[in-house]
Length: 293
Image 1 (cartoon, rainbow, N blue to C red):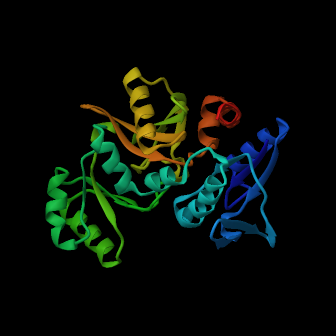
Image 2 (cartoon, rainbow, N blue to C red):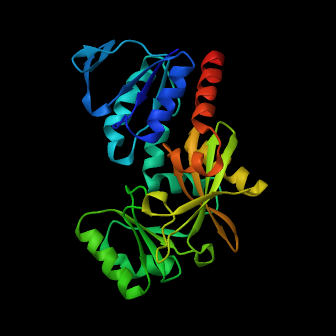
């Protein structure tokens, strides 16, 4: 097969792993930086140019698109979709996942349990936003943040009001979320491929922090999950429309809660913690799906 990996940085662990494993399987693999793609769009004829040349046909595309590259990345991915190329995740699903508000609305509409969340585009409603989620302490998140960036814990209502107003005055859209105290700085990352959770880890925040993200210094270990948590992760990924997803779950007193669904989950932390070759399983899924399409 001829494969393309859409990524801004070919040196990233996940990108390198997918590239190397696909190449060892005998596939022809090209890493494409979406920021250097440009298009010739005409009626009945659209071509994708890259580094001064027209890109030919690919059998499969693996999108590794971060939230900061959503527009460029999904624009390139849509081109491949119109060509009939198999894409590991669809552009519309990635857009949904990268928009935290959109994804929470979709999940909530299908009965997925999650932390209570409030949103407003006006800072005049700050006190009510805080009241909706049960008051402080609470979590404030930038809608387009990732890897724990733009996530703040407000210990008091006064601090929450100041932070929310500051974000609004900077024209930044934020979510206000219930703080799940009993999670104790831990969450579960479930790696979903197709209709199966292939690996799961517990991430624990470093001392003095509440963010469990590995990029923020969190630690990971392999963990067994319950049938309820497994079904919840699979259902959440399916609702967003992702074939491959990282679903983050909090263990609350009232049961498991979906915190976030990630369209390009990092592989380094979960592969190292579990010893599972997830990159190989992703290539397996592509080969199987492509042959059966």
